[in-house]
Every structure is written in C-alpha cells, then in structure tokens.
Length: 305
Ligand SMILES: NC(=O)c1ccc[n+]([C@@H]2O[C@H](COP(=O)([O-])OP(=O)(O)OC[C@H]3O[C@@H](n4cnc5c(N)ncnc54)[C@H](OP(=O)(O)O)[C@@H]3O)[C@@H](O)[C@H]2O)c1
Image (cartoon, rainbow, N blue to C red):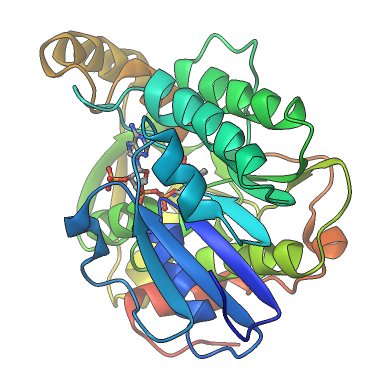
C-alpha cells in the first residue's frame, strides 16, 4: 500500500454507517488515505471510491488476507461489530472473535496503532451479552501489546446510523408507544464528531492504551429527543409508554424463534441511561456539534445555530 498521503488508515467494517461517514471525510483530503476493508464484494457498493480510498475484501477467518489488507497502514480503525444479533452474526463472533483476528493481523502487519469504536457500558464482567462482548473486545486490545485508542460511544446520530434512522422513523408519526415512556437519558453524539475524533487519533496517535468516553453536548430524555425531532418535522407527537418488562417478555419469546433481533439484551442496551464522568471531547481536541444542528441534518432542515 503506497500513497502520497501523510497517514494511511485501514478501516474494518468500512461499509458500516460509521465507516461510510469516515470514508466520506477522508475522500478529498490530501493528507489522508484510507483502505476500506469489507467481508464481501457487495459491501463495496456505494462506498466512496475517490483516489485516496482503496478497497480490500477480507474475512476474519482469513488471517493472511486480513494481514495483507492491513499492511502499510499507519493506523487501523476497527468498526466491525454489532448490536443486533442474527442467526449468522452473534456477539461472540462479530464483536469478540473479529477483534481477536484483527489484533493478530495488526501484529503480523506491524500496524502501530488501533482505534476501536466501542460502547458506553462496555464491561467484560457485564451480565448483558452486548456490553460483555464489547468489554472483551476492549480487553483483547488492551492486552495486545499494540498502541490502542478505545472510544466508547453513546447513541450515534447521522442519516445512515441505525439510531438516526429509527429516531426519524418514529418521530414522523403523530402518536407512538416507546419503551418505558422514553424516560431514559441519552447523550446522542453526531457521527461526524466521532469521525473527527477517530481521524485525530489516527493523525496524532497516543502511546499505550487510552480509553475515552465521548458523548454529545446535551443530556436529555429519549421522549424529549423524539418531541424535538417531531417539532423539526413540523408536528407534535404524542409519546406513550410500552412497559419495558412486557417488551422484554415478548422479545425473549420472539428471540427464541428469530435467534436475534430485538432481544431483551438489546432492550436493556437501548434503554440504559447514557452517562459519563468526563466527556472526552476536550482530550480528543474536537468541537461537538450542537444537538439542534445534528437533528437539523437528520431531518434535512436548516440548522438553528
Ligand atoms: N451506531 C451506534 O449508535 C453505535 C453505538 C456504539 C457503538 N457502535 C459500534 O460502532 C461500530 C460501527 O457501528 P455502525 O452502527 O456504524 O455499524 P453497522 O452500520 O451496523 O455495520 C456493522 C458492521 O459490522 C460488520 N459485521 C457484522 N457482523 C460481523 C461479523 N460476524 N464479523 C465481522 N464483521 C461483522 C458488518 O459487515 P457486513 O455488512 O459484512 O455484515 C458491518 O460492516 C460497531 O462496532 C458498533 O457496535 C455503534
């Protein structure tokens, strides 16, 4: 891999919502080049293909291809991972095994630095399978001997993120029932702010293993986020409650049949309060987008700030 850029970034899960936002930021920058790594050829469709972005296809059970895909990269951004399980993609394979394979390939390719997008609440001792798998992935990185920056994130908002799409879809309705009445508190983060932070970590890699918690500028309840989004769409929304316990019971039964989807574990994740002791925006040197601007981007309206 050779380019005239100062920094070459290899991105796993490049077709993810965060991956696409990241590659869009790399496109057109002289100082940066990227290698977009996906598991299957169809996943390359729609990815930016301007000259500083190359592509590789590598699965996580193909160590040589994965190592070759990383070779020459100054920094590896690890985005492959899931919240919603399916029959073919489980927390253990997508979040843990893929990270183990990535670490081995990064060592073999002599990559210097890995940036990992993790989740608030990641904890290898958690009773929740998602949080546990993200915690185990963090531990693999911390014990890898490589320099690693872990960025724990909350709900990510952007036109392509699952959270952004779900918010818009729900806010478009006049009357909705949401889990627990939407009283859990969120710190939604603009996906573009996360991309800025990731690229800064790649350009100015810190030594050792650093863990940051990066959240958005405002703390608010989910129901308020819905009401504000509906307001931007020009209407009021009536927010009612679906009891969480009932939803988990239904999800547990459905999950047995579906082997994934909206399981009780996912319900616990999406109704968790998002709180941090210290927001990493200052440490990471980024300016957070005001929430009204993020919501305006999402709704396709004019920003108010
Ligand atoms: N979106 C959020 O609000 C949020 C919040 C906290 C943390 N994160 C983390 O940030 C990262 C990017 O999130 P995103 O929402 O942009 O992701 P996304 O759009 O859901 O994309 C998921 C990515 O993971 C890959 N993947 C799925 N199963 C896999 C497996 N078994 N092995 C290897 N790769 C697999 C997918 O590849 P295929 O298309 O080939 O399946 C895809 O590239 C993820 O690790 C996610 O957990 C996201």
